[in-house]
Length: 137
Image (cartoon, rainbow, N blue to C red):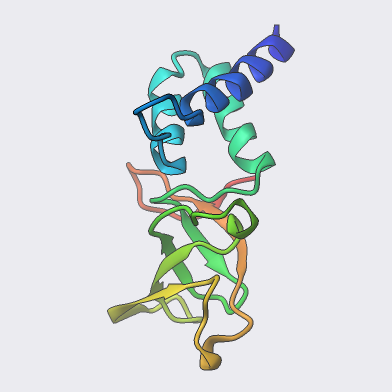
């Protein structure tokens, strides 16, 4: 059933992240990548996406729109769960969606004074085949 798949996905995430004697826990991005690799069916992949959304995580490689209108690429998951919504990103476009000649790396957790107020507005789903930008909702 769907509920069983949701519970299995959450339990599997915890198993992957649990440290064992002599073995450090997998990082958040590695745990998500492993879950995505293990997801065989559409419902499994949907449950992985549900888990990601429910914990407020933006995995590495996720394209996002900032509240400034800029488009950015998430570089990694923050180390602290309290900062999941504020990952390090690489800003790829300006507010008018024009590609920047040199992308700007910024950690949304520790923003310089001139960048105060940047936050993720929404994740974007960019289909690999077309390159078109669409909502991920």
